Structures are given as C-alpha cells and as structure tokens.
Image 1 (cartoon, rainbow, N blue to C red):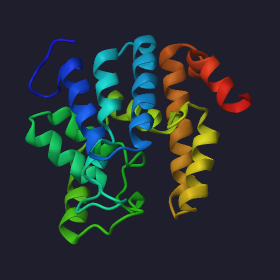
Image 2: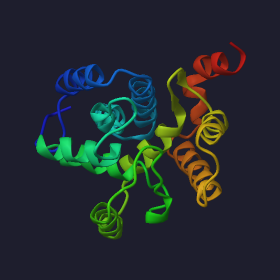
Image 3: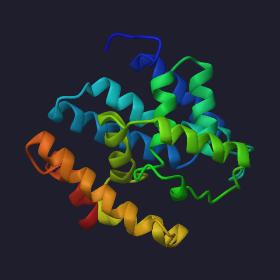
Image 4: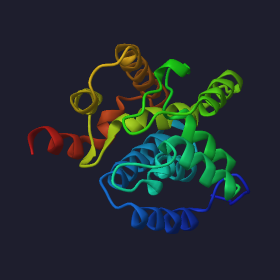
Length: 208
C-alpha cells in the first residue's frame, strides 16, 4: 500500500503494534491480530484494499496499550484515538472510535473499566453525528466480532463469550442484529459466505 499521512505503512504499523503490546501485554493483542487477518482476507475478496484493512484491524483496539492492571486514565477508544491523531494517522484514529458503535448511537457505549467524563461523551455524540460509516468502518466493526484471542470464530461464539463476561446491556440485541447484518453485507460483497475464508480456523475453534 502506498503510504500517506492518514495511515502508516504495514512495516510502521507492525513496529508500533509490537511497542503497544509491550506496554500492556495481554490477550487484546491476539484479538487485534485475528481481527486484522479477518479484515485482510475479506477485503481481498470484497474489492477493498487488503493492506489498509489489515492495518485498521490491527489498530482498532490500540488504546489498550495505556492500561495498567486493567485500568487507564482514558477508555481504550479515546487512548487509541489520541495516539493515532498525535501520529497523524487520522484514518486509523477514526476506526478507534467507530469500531465501538456499530449502531452509530451514543447509547451503545459502556466501559467495563472506567466512566467517561462528560466532555468525552459530548465528543462521541458530536463525532457520531458527523460521521458516515464507509466500508472500512463496517468491516472493522464486523471483524472486531470475528476475531477472538484464540483466532477467527463465528459470530455466535464471540458474541456469547462477550455477554458471559460483561452481561446483557440495553443495546446488546440491537448490536447483535447489526453485526449479523454486516456479515450479510460482506457475504454479498465477497460473493460467498465469508466463513468459508476461515474454514479450518473456525472448525478448530468449535471442534478442536
């Protein structure tokens, strides 16, 4: 992919991601790598830029670099957004926020670690009101759910696992509907059931 000011090269992305993982080692890094691989494969089949998709998937949760003992001064979406903006990677910064809002609604937001301050909530509200999701936003929202720490899985496995950890929220079922709609959208773009791109990995996650 030709580098530009809005996104790093793949080599730059890998180096920065390794640094982030060293700041806060944990399963979030493997989740991001799985999401990145899923995004790359779907983008290749669906007519999007696979390198861009991989980098966006790799960095969608980059804000977890700032966590220590499960806590941070900022939620991961803000920590990631700020880091990417500081580096001039505006397209990646956008993904750091949009991946958490598949329904494009401020009421989706719930942090398991900290409460967002009013100014942060105001920022999200304004951001969502001004943002029209493109196919990369949609792709990373989907791949956030396809990528688990143990690899690429079907939506049902990932969504149930998240609910078992965090419980149901007011937007849980609405978000589930949205993620399944996103899968249908990319099935059509790819001309196939995208699970077929990851058959061995999915089988291993179910039967292994």
